[in-house]
Length: 291
Length: 217
Image 1 (cartoon, rainbow over the protein chains, first blue to last red):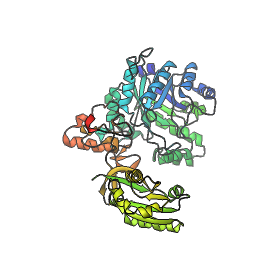
Image 2 (cartoon, chains in turn yellow, orange):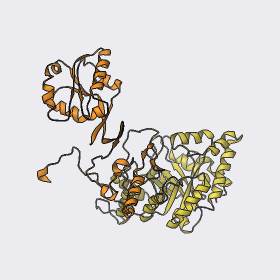
Image 3 (cartoon, chains in turn yellow, brown):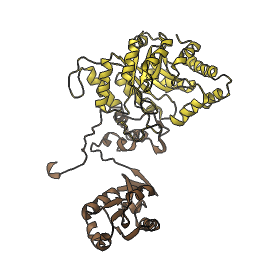
Image 4 (cartoon, rainbow over the protein chains, first blue to last red):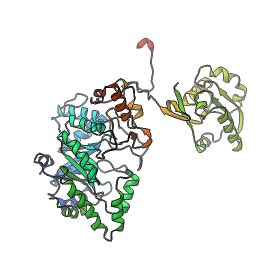
């Protein structure tokens, strides 16, 4: 079933994220994903990576589609002006991709290519101007497109609660709701209590919320993410449990299953980030009783 | 008063720029770089000592009152004998001063500073950027606070998810511009202007290099 249809039917959504490999053949990635065929409603292919370079995202989406997965083209407005964004979206549409997931993305403080320009100015306003033009069947320059182009839009939102003026927490979501987002995808969730407070406030938008869940396989992985992505992203209790566990994988699966089990009662789905462990995703889905 | 805010280039970079140039005349400025302590009289004296220690010959030095002023050439003319003995002018001013001297004297110049931004002193020894001179001012809708300059991402539809207790996720010493805007608009009873989705920013405010003629405006 396509992501669009699963959302319409109010099913508990399961999606996962992969990255288009630079060195490996993308066919290998598809082979790994065959283990979870029929158990995910969509697979997003991310265009950004902490090290800077990823493979051809649209090509990987195309391969996923041919392998009967519903691909989600995941891009960021950080690296693109409107012309590049438009070019990529036209390419994605021509490849038959129906789902689009867009994040503004964080300001890059670690990783490679830190001196490169970041187009943060391409925020919700700019994204909506590109999507609106394409929906009407022409480019932002006014040139006609072969057909009207519309995506099921997913928008990234910050799910931390209590770190801002409550009214401001909602503003970004208000804007994305106005431009017609089909669902919200949150930042990684570990703390179910604070996430539930967040959800109570955002339910008023009437837009499904899918929670991002990271698969942390080792304590070192959690520490790496805290060091290079965002301090405090992976909580101490996760790192402690993994470092003390005699069987790391069992502990990792338990953490994942507990979080997902709690989320089932709170939001409309989960987006699973495997961080390169797609071949093991099936065991995690089994443990969390996802489809 | 607005100021040109500078920081010293590293010794390694200055050594590289001065490689093979042994006779040096140093120029400082009595305005912005004196305020930022990057090119006033004490810094020029310290630079002279450092150059002498590294085996260079300093033919002279001067701290002009306002390096970016057209009158700078008049002051430098008084030092011309020492300037002509030098292979290079090491200029401890902002880039405006360096370019003014370069165009006036037509001599080899090496900047000793990096020009960071146009800003003002907001506390003792603290300087903040105020305006990026984008040419498309939007502060009429943001309570007089510029998000293009003060938001790290330059968002015109903010805040982003990185706002944290009124500070910016990339630097807890920097205020979140959109929290400042929210608070200001709340005080003014104009939060409605923040709820409006701003369209794409116009990046063609003034194409580089900026040029403006009153007769054509």
